[in-house]
Length: 534
Image (cartoon, rainbow, N blue to C red; front, side, top):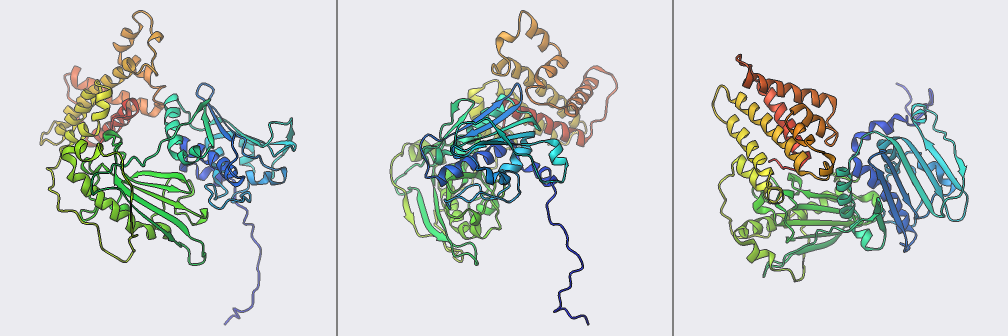
């Protein structure tokens, strides 16, 4: 038998990571997630230096030239720490403990995920200014060394990240969504004095503690500490607040569970089994009747103890921190979901009018207990049909955009047709889907004056476009980022519809054809009108 106590080294291997690690994780990032990684870094430096006034994070996104720039005056990077801008896992030592950018890879991979050419310029205090450039060639070469160039001095304490050759194009609609994402994600920091500007416009604040205070049913809050790690004695401070809300938006589904970690919004409107939904005995399935319930979870403490994922856009449900907080979340979600169903008959009288009161403190729910706040049983409503769900989900949208009513009802008719025991139901469904899509595309051109300003069309130009399906598609495909493969499929299904209507010979419409085309039509209706589907 070999002597296992002896350590004989056959060879040494190189553990240096390959650069394609940057490329392999690009799928984790959409535009808001990647931009927020860059904002996180600036906010961390702002907090570590005592939250000085006058700190501004400026975002510039040019839709015409497809350029991105993020500039902050939160401190700059000293020249002896420039390697941290490209070294995976390396982070700058900061004085604050409750940080939001602790992984050491976020800003780096987010920049690369956004574009193929990244230029980072920085100046720390009154020292010299330096610049590094991440290019396609540098990413292809396994040598990690990178040139540092001294440049003419920029403003002190400033860092600028410029990104070009973007990997995914963005539109004005994407910027509108980004603005809303920023004002919700960083509301706490903006309220504390850190300004964020998007294309020159200061980002506002969106908060979710819009509680109602019905008599005897005020919001409830549990405050306690947890220690997620057996090897780390440090604790996370936890606040779990639940209640009925006054800012319900039916088509937005803005209820459920919200997570903040060190003041940053990580996840909102969560309605999954892990937080008590889909279980009849707890919060029940997500349903408009329970849409007055909101639970806000706030965790504060060491960043490495947080249950967030590395992109900070989700929660790890297997993390010890989440498992310790979960019973309290479920208790409040269950209680206020049942209460929401009880008050569904008169929400104005029972809920909305009660806009003042205090949040009631509660004892945290131990993970070993099965005790729950109990309300009297609530009578269940009959199950809604697909068409009724469509109308309920989109009632706010229809009120603002009346022309979407026909689009919504037509998608309900597709479901009705497919639910029949008819041999030719696929033919009916295809005609409905294609006709609805064509009407939707025309409505989009006529009614969306931001995407299609009226002065764009002279004389009979608009009438000429609307009279021709191909011209309609050509007019909108740029606005909706319709790629070549999708355009080809749209034309294929349009051809099938024409064969059914204009030719004598019938064609066979397969189930998979209907499933694929229906998914495509739903996706385009979402993009054009934000129509929601069950």
